[in-house]
Amino acid sequence: MGVATARQLVEFGFSERTVYRRCLDGGPWQRILPGVILLFTGRPTRTQQVHAALLLCGPDAVVTGLEVCRRHGVRRGPARPVVDSGEYAEVQVLIPDDRQVRSVGFVHVTRTKRLPGGPTRDGVPLAAVPRACADAVQRGVCTISSLAEELDSGSRRGIAAPTAVLKELRAGVRSAAELAAKRLWPKTGLPEPWWNATVRDAEGRFLGIADCWLDEVAVVWEIESSEWHLSPEDHDLTVERAAGFTAAGAVHTATKPTKLETDAPYVIGQLRATYEQASNRARPTLTAERARAT
Image (cartoon, rainbow, N blue to C red; front, side, top):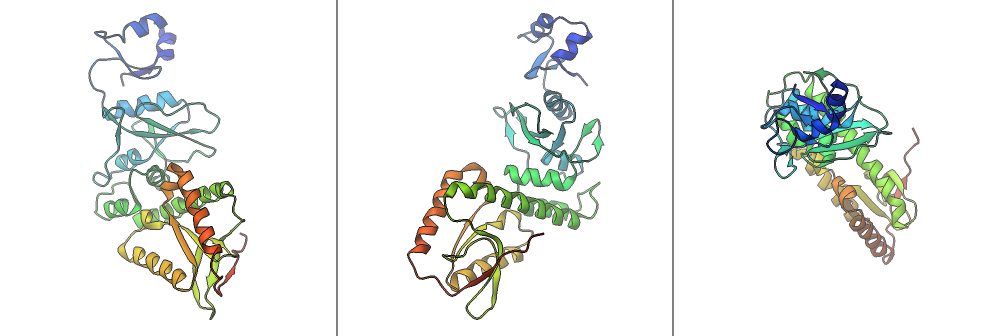
């Protein structure tokens, strides 16, 4: 494979001083990541880059994201983001929650309490396809629609029932985004909302299920779903639902899932301003029902 950790090389019989001396300019080895050594000069293959990422992250680490899609046969579709000064494409890796490893260079590390099961290919442990795709979408490197196009194109060796995969993927991404929204909410200082409330107009007509509903001022906050639409029809339905809320008198605001992670202060400010705007007008005659506990 040509990749090893410095600790492995020391255990094999090299002194630590020798290991790092061989990685100096002009030496026969090179350091690709902290504590991870390439036992040759020149550019590593993609597989060697991935193995280096796994060595950095330690036992039980699992590759996720677009790398998994590529190894399952998705050859077109979204390109992997290039990082580390443009040298290598990013590798996303999941590690146990109690492991203290940080993202560095071309390796993006995510800690998780539940490591996903999945296959091992060419010695590389992979997350299951739905989880890997969800991680890629959450990372902001692609959208579900772009993955859907690729899976429907016929280039999907090793991926059974792509429609089922996409359904599971969309559910996973949406639940993760809603969880992020719920975690953010207490920081707004606003009254506690109802989540996934059923909203009806003054005549009792169904308007939709609001991701987040502030009943006292009739405000709808939704996690803007265009990032995981599978078709233009899905997008049209989302636009129509938002228009229905607005026409009935609710104040509607939406946030992209990636914004929750990348610019929380902006989202908090947006929510506070929306609440203030809604408080300064008469509440429309709308009714809502809390979601039933499951």
